[in-house]
Figure 1 (cartoon, rainbow, N blue to C red):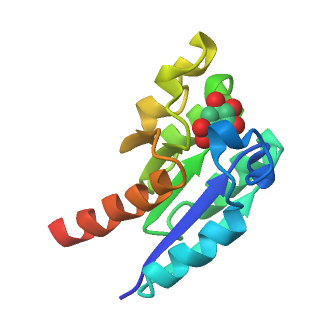
Figure 2 (figure 1 turned 120 degrees about the horizontal axis):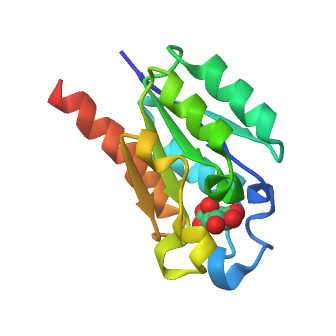
Length: 145
Ligand code: DQA
């Protein structure tokens, strides 16, 4: 049985590659996503990005029970959205929170996550490899079962 994982990216993550490359690197998400799919041929990936809070909530709700795991980078909504936090708390499918930058090393307002308390775990600060580490966490969980 293939592991099925959805990656949900929040606002401005469609700009990766050109957006503040000193913080987020110069690789586009599309480029990275291709390499992720090649690295894990046995995992079925789905990718969704939205700049809109409600669309992220809808996608989380729709993803519940349809994937083995959800990787969520809610971007700036991480620090503001009680609504997305409530959705993660409400659904059964495990969610791993990721951040490209180390949010604890940045401005005070980025050090608070409304998502983290409802997640299996959080990965922050490893560039795009944060997503790879999140995938690994699901692969390893599967082995534990
Ligand atoms: C981010 C960190 C957030 O503070 C920021 O608003 C983002 C990206 C990250 O991946 O490092 O858009 O989630």
